[in-house]
Length: 375
Image (cartoon, rainbow, N blue to C red; front, top):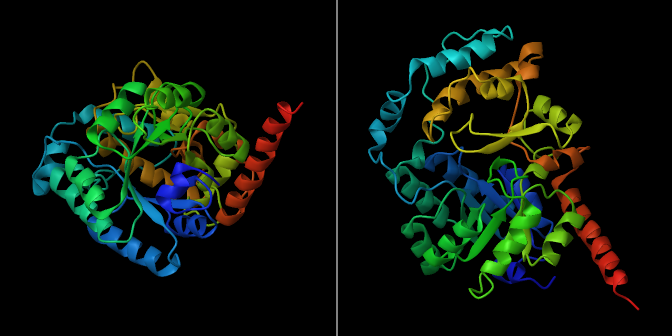
């Protein structure tokens, strides 16, 4: 295909697949798309392990890394970061989260004896370590999921010839990104799973494409995109490719727990909710009694990132584990980040098969558009 994204990333088809699962990244890149490993769950050491595995199995095909690196961060001492965060959280938040589990017959004792550290690298030093690990591998793209990337990341990208991308949810955010020196803007509509804004993909993509027309920066569309015909629609609006995430959660190679996969495969597009209750920033999740509880008038107001994750992630980890063991209450509470495109995700396929289906569906949609203007 002719696309600036294909040229930048040296790929055949401008389908970018974000996944926390290394197997998905490899299979998508081998099939002609572009796999991007989400690094938010990894420390510097575990990310090194994951990227080494990808390098050994991807047969030289290009891939990228997506991370959460702050432009600046108030807490810079890594050793004190978790303690400093937990001291700022009122006890009522821990009690409220525990009460949700108890109402569903789940033992809530010892929920917080171990600290939740997955996002610890959000501190300045740990973010730098993650960036260093990523650039020590032959990546073609590095993306920042929240906010403007730190100058260090942008400068490293330019020095090493690695494309720098950033996810945005508004026209104003897109302009800030290109002014900072980002090479690719990912315009993510509110339909997206995970962190998202409140503007729909159908509106956001052409708005951002128009705003960046004179900058020469490619726009990649994201948000609820799980089919090739949706991809064709985004390309018709000016996008140079698409960024996808949710569609890979239910593929055969995904490490999504089976109980959550089944729940997603049964869900309709209306069974997601956009809420601040999980991380402190708005993110779209599969609706469940857990998410409903945080939307009640009596629920405590979600804390800012990264405080809220210290409240929610340990209980949700216990819920997911028990759901896999067949616990009825846990299966009801189980939730995960997923976009509104979940309503179109009705079967489990291999990652490679999904890429090929995207290609065929895209071509069919392009032919329909072409036939509509034939005399």
